[in-house]
Image (cartoon, rainbow, N blue to C red; front, side, top):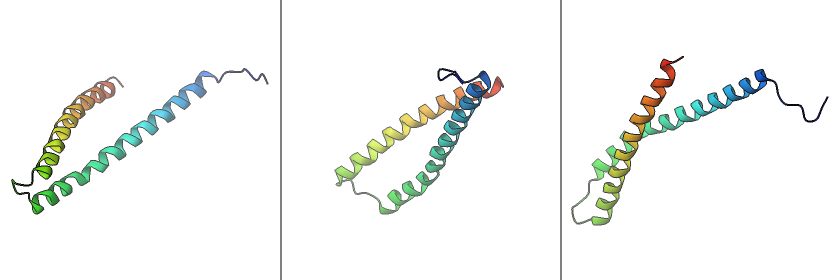
Amino acid sequence: MDGDAQPGPDALEGGRAATIVDSVTRAVCLVDELATLPELVDEIEVVGVSASDSAIVDCIRELIEHLRARAAAMVCLVNRLERISAHR
């Protein structure tokens, strides 16, 4: 067998499908991690923050900015995935 032989089209397609399945699985796991976010926000609410604790207030504001940015990105990602799934 030739050492420079390239995989056939079926092998390439199978490898790409496995990579896509892995990517989808990893994405699902990441989204599942977000399920704990409401509990974390609940903990923040329960503890509460006084207006004088500016360091914590700043951290919460930073979290809000991150959540807003990620929420917008998630909407875009969902739209892209819906376009992909609609063509199949």
